[in-house]
Length: 328
Image (tube, rainbow, N blue to C red):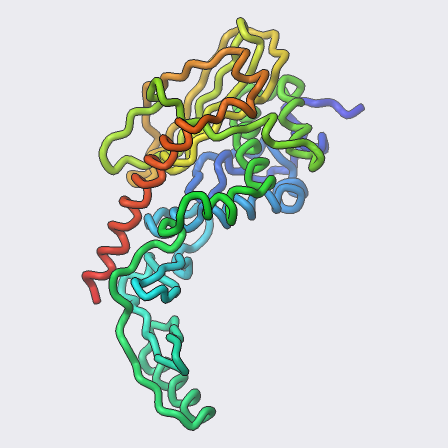
């Protein structure tokens, strides 16, 4: 049996090879990283479906808020928008001098994604020559809203959140943070087995969490954070983590149900808008019974509370869209 120590990949037990793994995915603004978590193969191949799932679901918030991504350029990142007539199109928040050009073609808009008016004119002439028709150029549509935030939450869940890879990605964030601090894989084999095993049901390992009887993280107006809170509980013999992404997508992850060590807690909070680590006073009240029936922790009251969090983020992202409208 291969040794399970700080010098091996916690997923495959192969020797570490200097591969950088972000604790929270860089595609959604994560900055903290470590070379003592995953080998290059696991980092780039085995967990790619997990990383892709969290990027596909959450990247629009990252892009629209003009957050900076570690190592990669943000210039060509776009978000889907919709106007009052239902027209869907792309918006490039990081291109300050970019205003899209739309052409009305056969009862629909065609969007030209270029800052070069010369190139747009050339494409338009080619289109007219090819079809033998004359096309009309128009301005950006009015009353723009963020498409992902404009849908009913129930429909959003059906389209997006019913993805086991997304929940595995949340659990990987929890495992990354634990291993970056404690570096004892054997303590969290419970969650590592879930990350590696497609047959296990995510509802036994992770759940959305929006308590209605207390506030975990008090937010200032306009504040948007990524937050990780790790708790090793000697009395209840559990290791769990509370995770907030964009101060909106909140989860509890169960890492172990047979913890035998000392009480321990650790918190990391990154202010996304100011790009700095900050201190927070976290209040969380969970005991062993919560984790024995984790799939039943979710309630209708929490569902309503989650809607409030979602609406708050929608308003903050809508401000960025409104700024673009003023530039037209």
